[in-house]
Length: 294
Image (tube, rainbow, N blue to C red; front, side, top):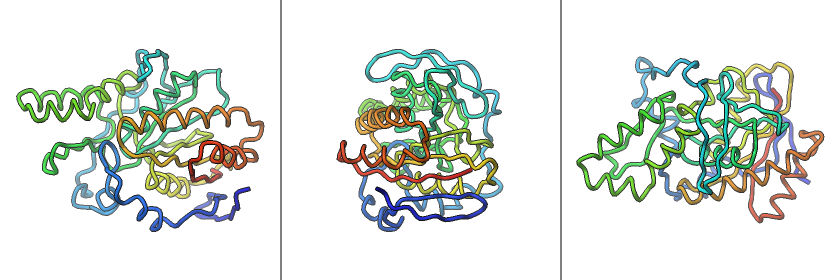
């Protein structure tokens, strides 16, 4: 069994498994490439020059994120429809009992690949979010780094990149190799724009699946900063994933397999620790896990 300790901060109660410190975990993953939506820690959390207090991003009104979207198509080619709900673009339905949020840094690659995988697997209560300050995209050069505000439609980002690469053969080759334009087209079929977890007023989720260690910590920090209301359990799980299209596909499949097991639980908060532990033993993959009450 996992060993749990209790901690209370800002009216939010969390029960967490013993895990390496953030410093230890970050040092072990410091050499991983950061391409699509994973940012360096200093860029994401400490660099105030990029986003000063008088340069707050202008996000789209929430109503723009509530429009029905056409069928989403994953790498497997299967179609699935989704009707985003209010506030979090949470796809609602009756086929599944648990509500899921899939989270990476920029809501661009890993969380969106998982979002597509969940829809294709028949999950009907799914949302995807990011935790970074900005939506950061991979670039052919350091100088070419591009960032967008959360809430910028995927179609607008796509048009901007297509415009920039129209006469630039090097950019065309880069986008072809990284599949960035294909990723944006896929994202636009699923929902309107990238969304930021910290900007969602009500987090109505049972399970939050994170695809990065820093994102896992950012999610816990956000939950602990919110005022507790009904003390409903939220299972926060980290499936640490290298940020490239191929690994995102694999992680999406892993996330779906885990979610299918969680769906079988009667009391999620009680049974989740054993489910996660058994899943790790079966898959040979280490996950981080915590239950928070909000």
